[in-house]
Amino acid sequence: MRLTLTAKMFIAVVIVGVVAATFYYNPSLMNRVAPEAQRRGSNIPPPAQLPDQPFPSAPDPAAGCANLPEVRFYHWAWNAQMGLLLATGGKQATLGSGMCQRGVNLRLIREDNTDTMAALMAAFAEEHKGGAAHPAKGAHFIGIMGDGSATFLKGLNDKLAKLGPDYRAMVVGSSGYSRGEDKFMGPPAWKQNPQAARGGVVAGVLRDGDWNIAMKWLGDNKIPNNPDETSYDPDALNWVAASDYVDAAQKYVSGFCTDLKNVKTGAKEKRCVDGVVTWTPGDVTVAEKKGGLASIVSTREYRSQMPHVIIGHKKWMAQNRKLVTGMLAATFEAGDQIKSNDDALRRAAAVSALVYGEKDPAYWYKYFRFTTEKDVKGLTVDLGGSAVNNLGDNQQLFGLTPGSTNLFAATYTVFGNIVKSQYPQLLPSYYPVGEILDTSYVEECARGGAASEPDLAKFHPNEQIKDVVSRRSWDIQFTTASAKFTPKAADEMGALFNDLVVAGGTLVEIHGHTDNQGTSDGNQKLSEERAFAVKEWLRARSATNFPDGRVKIFAHGMTQPLAPNATADGRAKNRRVEIVLGTSD
Image (cartoon, rainbow, N blue to C red; front, side, top):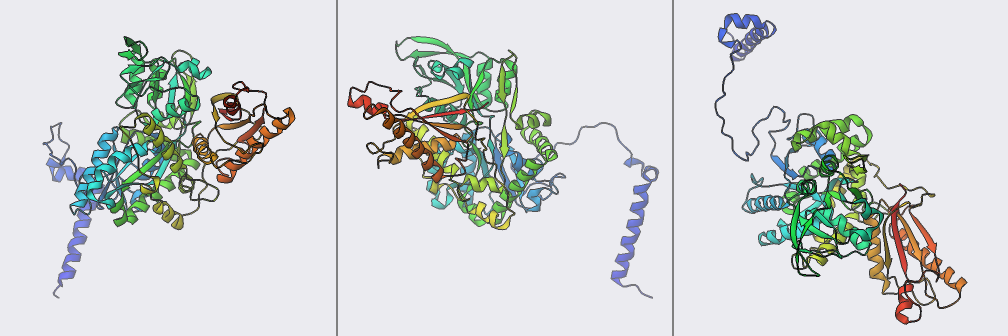
């Protein structure tokens, strides 16, 4: 009987399978049959020349979906990205990872320099404009601090404008928050009395998110900032420019000094770094290598200031919506896992050590949570502290849930205005938030994903401020002898709202004051009504950001004047609302 071709192929497959199984389960037989298969001695492998940026990626045993187009994400070493890293599983999306399950072959690449990030985004856009559906050069996405995005996107999108409006870079989501690790560190005396910081010299990356922390603190405490790092102002806080957050910490540790021109005397003076703005591991470096600095203020108090924002290309994302929503959904789901499962956090810490190429998993695990410990000088110092974002956190961040406000818009605007005020020639303007934010991808995830609870700040009704962060008077105008706001109060109230939203981890005291016109009892009642009016306006604008227990009111009437009531100008200064921010720790 003649065998068909199909039958012959079937018999051949069976024979090969039997032989292979025999050798697999009896390796000594292979050694006898094929002596060359035995283990050889040490040898030098032949050179392997690899392209700088292969696309699609060369097959990687650890990559679970290398057959899919590679999506490159450039980022810092930052614990707020734990969800993104867990969802990826390694330097590139691994077998069984959330990214591969969502069809996203994500590649994670550390890059600490924002100028390089901008160049990578521009290279991608130019190749895409040239017709490449999936550019082999540059970055599909980058992740940075939300409070620094106004400056970053102004520079980048001005360059991309030549390619057309569809090639603009856009914020589309967030993987987490800094919740303590980004901080302004200085001598303990500065914390006890903010005015003692006048004449201080701080190392940091100028116009960066950590620099922003110090800027907000200075503004809230009415302390001048010297934006010129080549000069020294004894009445202001001064700066030494660092190349990155690690360099900022090293400048303090090494006792870096420089000659600066005193703006008062005109003489050159040697001034040394006595403070720093940085984030983990920079704060840990300061504590372990030199010590002596306290956390003046951080993103623990300024809770909403620093979301990790994901920025991509408008046109490419529109053409690849499934990839974008898949990446976000996988990140959000991993965020939920980390929130509820310590093993998930440990796995994410292990991926962090691998991807960042720095420290070990135990380090990233430890400093993901806010930690208090002794530095080398025995000073108690606050270190670390981050949070991951799920879908609910993203909806809360972008004002997509009832009772919320667009927190990203607030922080984007507040710190865009700060940079604009300090460096008007460098940043004369920035893009309106509506031109750089696209929430449609988060909204699409919400339509297709399970609801998840956001992480909201909680306050106990009996909590009282023990540690004052800042104290500032606001020029909120009321109609004469009433608690009704005048039309002129709108701008001031808007600025106050954004300021308090950014400082979402603080307790708020609203102190009402009047001049001496009228009776003592009448002024006492009026100051209380005005303080209460401010509180209710804030709650009506965003109940989730001003929950029960956060805001308390105090009425002082005419008992605490700032200036003599003998003049109209003095009385105007005394009619004020003072805001005190602090913590109960």
